[in-house]
Image (spheres, rainbow, N blue to C red):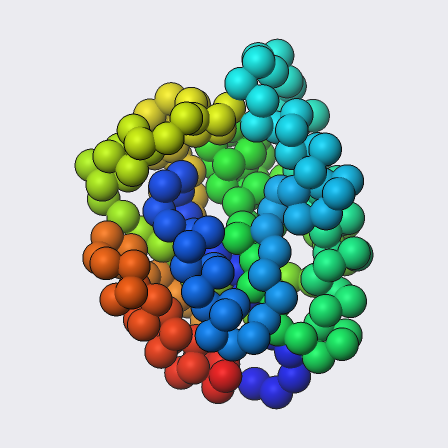
Length: 202
């Protein structure tokens, strides 16, 4: 592939997305960003979404807030970087909304997708790296930090989210790469770097 590319990391809470996104961005000299909260406006929206004291947010409202963050993020960060010839690596993307608000919250996935298609205006990731880790490893990692509103959601919710990611990856293997993230972070980073080189030529 020629030109700048848009690569995103997806996966359940505690799988190591932030670390691996940073390592990949450094290795390919990419702009590193995240959803939600990748812009100043997005940071304010993120405060609502992740605040543990917010316990009455309607699922539809949650979906629209995330879509608003994404529209701003793509307009302010992702598209300008790509237009300037810079690769972009993002910790989460539109697929997190499909997994969390669609599969996780139980909203119709097609409707969630339609809302986000309007928000992103066809700026879909070129490559999605899904990090998978067994549940016991995830539980251990999560026990070591203070949990936010999403991380405190029930076990069944997170199981649905993981199943959603797996289903999307299986349905679009040309766009998705599934990586075992239960190994040492350096080993995982090497696997990811090789996969990106093989798939995108960078």
